[in-house]
Image (cartoon, rainbow, N blue to C red; front, top):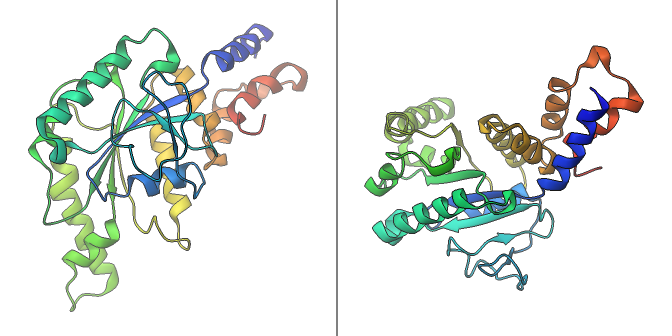
Length: 276
């Protein structure tokens, strides 16, 4: 890589400092648990005012459901989150607020104030299928082409809901996967503007298990959904859950056969912002 490109990489690092994510989902979908896993913390987030300044005290989950109030975790403050309680609870008014928020971010002149990704969480519950307003969200093109990742939470609960005693564990799991596809993922895939990627989660509240592996999958799918190279670099470099992802993109974007230590090491390290 040419020295001019290394210089450009350093400029990008100065310009792109925070990755902003809108998290949408009904109550009890496990959003806070997921975000704590993403940021590797057990602490509650800190809430900002609407101007993004004056860091307030941790709020123990209170006040998180105003989409215009950003919040972050001290363990990884480079992630800025916004939360919407979903459209079932707030109805059409909440859908309108979310669309207005997305539009406001689209018009922002500073990269810091723009929205970079949406994580839409759906609780897998047979008694509460996809709401019509949730489906309506995917009928209009999102301003700024912000990628949406559909996250199906509490898959282990769905297994219990569809479980048949005469079937073994593997067969019940397969039945739950079929139900997920038919009643959740397929309807979303058929929308005018479907999500960019899909992911199911289970056991995220448990200390044992593969919670971090599932977070790694979310990091991979989010990175793959980003079209802007600068945003991809920002996201991959600030996430701390998937070192393999950093290595993967560093290799992909480096001419290995022409690599020289003194010339290219700075560029390679751009993908490892959390350690450099």
